[in-house]
Amino acid sequence: MIPIVEHRRPLALAAALCPILILSCGRVPGQFEILNNQIPMSSGTGCLVPTSATAYQGQGTLDASIVRDGLPTAYFVFPLIENNLPGSTGGIDPNQIQLSGFTVDIGTIGLVPGGIQSALTALAGSDLLHYQIPWSGGISSGGGQLSAFVNAFPVALAQQLLQTGALTLEPSLTVKLTIQALGTTNNGSKMTSDPFSYPVSVCAGCLVENVASCPFATAPANRGNPCNPAQDDPVDCCVDNGTLICPPTVVGQ
Image 1 (cartoon, rainbow, N blue to C red):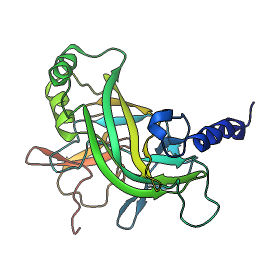
Image 2: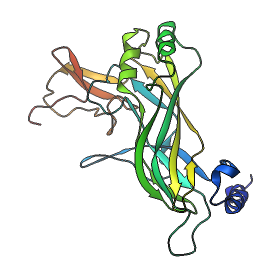
Image 3: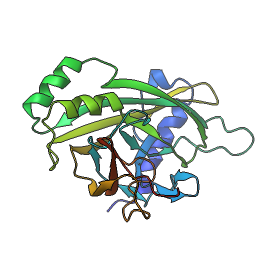
């Protein structure tokens, strides 16, 4: 197997040949990339996204039945971003990338239920399927890394798909989230990362575990994903006047 470093040497050379006029040289694969989708952890104030190339997952699950108004997104992606432009030898890092945001494009993989296909066709070209979100942060050159949050699936889109009635307990739809990071180097070069594609299975009820009336008497056994209850992890829920609340409210909390 060829060591990874052997791949990076020609990339560094290409970057050195066109450090400022990136657009005239074209986007060089591997200069600015999203490595993976990080696995978030619980913290005392909510969720924490690590910066570790080994703490990642390769696919996700979105339970549209849990999505409700007020959530920032139906699905988060937590990209680990890497800047492979040549490193600085001192002083201000000219190749440090200042992030400005992300672009998100939502497509499908494989068979799509008829009702959902009709809904997606009606939304073609809309800002529910193709959009840009702002973000900030600096990523040092020479292999610097940064993790981030990306609102990768609009709440309104999840609600519309659920209303078709075509989503089932077993995931019946797989979407492809294609994400690119945007930024500018300290020397003024605009940068767009390599596209990062992430598959997500969409269901209605597949993440819901124990359900009871609100509130629960004790803390739930399944608290769900620490950043968003509608994604990836099993979660207990309670019902309040017909509304599903995940994770559930608890007496005294």
